[in-house]
Image 1: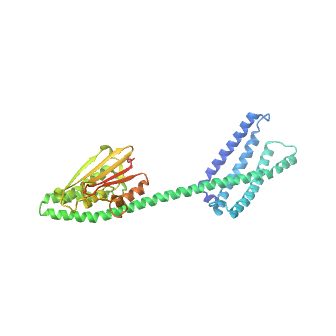
Image 2 (image 1 turned 90 degrees about the vertical axis):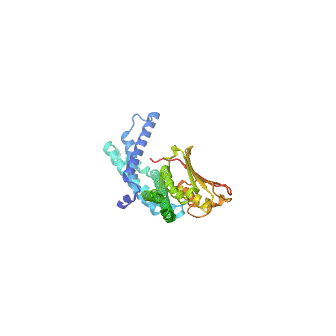
Image 3 (image 1 turned 135 degrees about the vertical axis):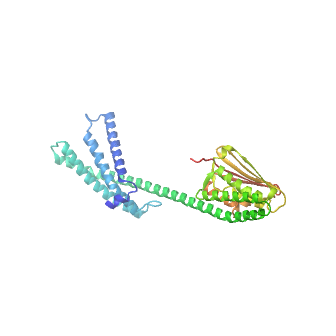
Length: 369
C-alpha cells in the first residue's frame, strides 16, 4: 500500500481535502433536506456526519489502490471485455471491504454515542443494508476510477504539449543556429573582400567597414541565445549590414527606412529580415550594372506587426513558387514563422518581371514583458 501512495500523481493530502469537501457537502445536503421537509423532530448530527465521514474517509484511503489498479489495467480507446471484467471484480471486492470496515466504524460510533437497548436488532438492521450499500460503493469505485482516468489522460496530454513546445523551441534554436552558420562565412567573405578592395582606395572607409563588421559580429554573439529580439535591434543590425553592402556596391545601392516608432519595441524572431534583405541584394541587382534601392518598412495595425522589404530590382514572374524552394532566404523565413506562429501569420510576395520584388510579413503584435 505504501508504494500505491507513492505512485499517486499528486500529494495524498489533496485526496483527503476532496473527501472532506464531499463530507461537508453531504452533511449540508441532509441538513437542508431536513429544514425543507421536517420529517423528524430534530436533526441527528451524529448520524449525519458519521455516515459520510466513514464512507469518504475510507475511499480516500483506498483511492491510491484504485489509481494503481487503473495503471495496472488501463482503459484505452474504449473498455475491453477483459479490462471491464477485471475492474468489475475489483469494484465488488473493494466495495465489500469498504462496507465491512465502514459498518464496523459506524456501529462503534453509534454505540459509543447512543445507549441502544436492543443491540442485536440494530446490528441486524445494519446487516440488511449491506447488499444495497455494496451496489452504491461499486458505483463510487467507478466514479473514482473515471476521475483518475480523466486526470491521468489530461496529465498525459499536458505533458505531450509541453514536450512539443520544448521540441519546437529546440528546433527553432537549431534553425537559427543553422541560419547564423550559413550567414557568417558568406557575409564575412564578402565583407573582407570589400575591406581588401578599399585598403588601396580609402583607408578610412575600410576602417569604417571593419568597425561595422565588428559591431555586427558583437551583436550576433550577444544575441546567440535569443530567439526573439525587439524590432529596434533587428533594424539596427540591418543598418550595419546594409552599410557594409552599400560600401561594397559603391553608389549603386540606396537604402531607405520607413519605420513607425510604435513598431520599434515589438518583439520579432531574431534575424527575420536579414535573409530577405540579402535576397533583395543577391537576386535583385547584384549581377546588374543598374542602380538599385531597398526599402525597409514597418508599422502596427489592428494588433498586428507589419514588416516589408522591397527592392526595385529585376523581379520575377513566378513568385508563388519561391516559398517552396529550400534555401537560406524566403523558405527559411517562411518555415520559421510557420513554426512559431502556426497559422497566425502571413507572408505575401508581390513581383512582376522587371518591376522589383516585395515581401510583406504580418505577425501578432507582442512586447517584451
